[in-house]
Length: 241
Image 1: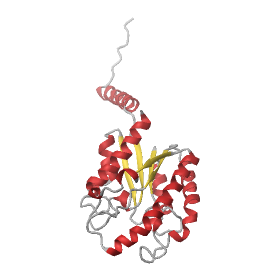
Image 2 (image 1 turned 180 degrees about the vertical axis):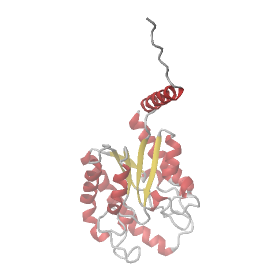
Image 3 (image 1 turned 135 degrees about the vertical axis):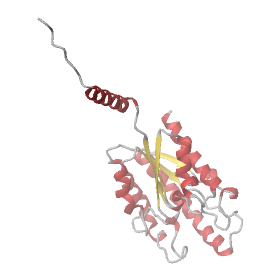
Image 4 (image 1 turned 180 degrees about the horizontal axis):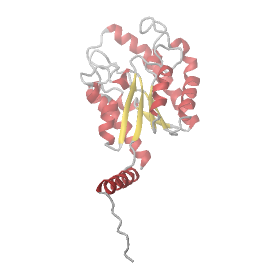
């Protein structure tokens, strides 16, 4: 008795091979680590000619490499305090939708506004709510299914030595700079209490006017944003290793 010869179409063989390659690739190629940079105009990349290239999240992407995907959630004027306008609390749906593996939060600079500084903005009037709002924010983000690593940052400093500051700007920053230090103390306490990471972007950049935009003193220049990206990037790499 002759055995039946089984013929397989070239199309069927090709489809089977393609499925095998796709499945194997999905197993062998790990997904990128998603990093969410949450913050205000300093995260956004204000005062830059090309924020898509030189903001700190963009330079952090370059520092970390192709195994990471860094997304910029910075919003100009953003506060941590719920009663601020605008506030990070309005950005939570976008952050949650990204479901990041790592969240870096740098907020507090705009929360120093109020009591006669920054025009009619009222944030410092609610400073007693800063710490509890920060705890709630960490708790809210910790619930994400990605179980993200969370890093709280001491915001970059206000540098009064920056060239070109006028008398009004100097007067305002002189009032706000001690306020920022007070909020940094609260940030450290929240990080310790919630057992999340802390990154100091304040001390290493303070009294370094060459890293800040002239006539501004708050927003870094391109080199300043690079310095922030390196501080954040080195902290992330150290934690991984």
